[in-house]
Length: 407
Image 1 (cartoon, rainbow, N blue to C red):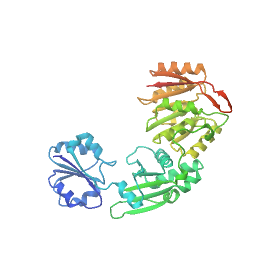
Image 2: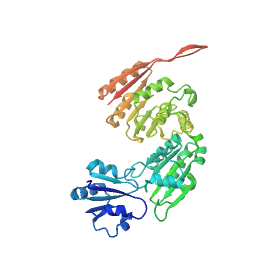
Image 3: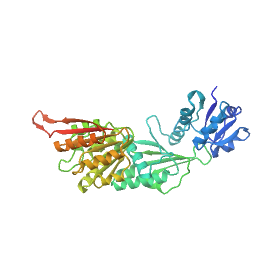
Image 4: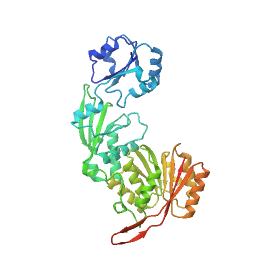
């Protein structure tokens, strides 16, 4: 017998079957809004949050039966994960109801088998960061369902998304983005609304809501990998060449989520492909040149790479504006390579990587020496690329050395 009954609730009433599960329980944990449905239940009642207090109470009650009430499916961004991790799968029996995703998509009349899902519920991300994540994923896949909280409410997200698009002069997506919101699903006061970002920015919403951000397929992003220099706006050849970019991204070994620093971003070509390969990444480009900054903004707009944040300035000073990185790419250092490497290493995640592209032998030697002194495992590979065609003379590019430091 499983001593913990994890019961999903959809709507405002307990079914007879679920009420029957409570009869043998000595403890029932529930949200405040679920109190009314527990009339007649004699078990001791406690709030479902904070989670640590709940787990302590459950431990004290075991091996006697306890029940935990949850909204919808407890295993869909719910309390189920924590309880199973804490007490083990053999101790928990799950009784799911329809999830918020299923109910919302039914109200929106929107299939969800190909839907991207982002949970901001309880997220520590500030609104600009949350909006970047949401918009980048929408530009990649066309539709994102988002679980919100009071800090990341639909109106606040709509205002932040609109500002983000306005800052990049992306008027096409500003008009085309459609926001649908489902409030109080399955409860009295259920409400469905929809509109543009500017429409929804001025409204207020119940704390219990789910939103769907969608975009026409024609405005979704370009290929996930394999952009060419001809497709990326850049100045005076200041772009990481295609083959070098591919090898650099391989060396970075990008995680699905986390933070990437792109120092000396130029056109932002490395960041553009990283943004498409890992939409869950947050990418900060450090670039001081106004012309290159304009190119980066144009490229963000063209490719929908809104998980990229452009920072005006020079490293290492400008790095203070960014969160700690999981990966660092250095395409240009302005003669401050050692200081940049030291500043990057000081904030890099435990399993992080730093990748430096070097044209000059002096840069290669400095990068290898400094990284080794900082305790990194260092490898260096030199890449020589020659372009040719049926009626084109072979053209060799300058060799590039890719130095990788693994923490």
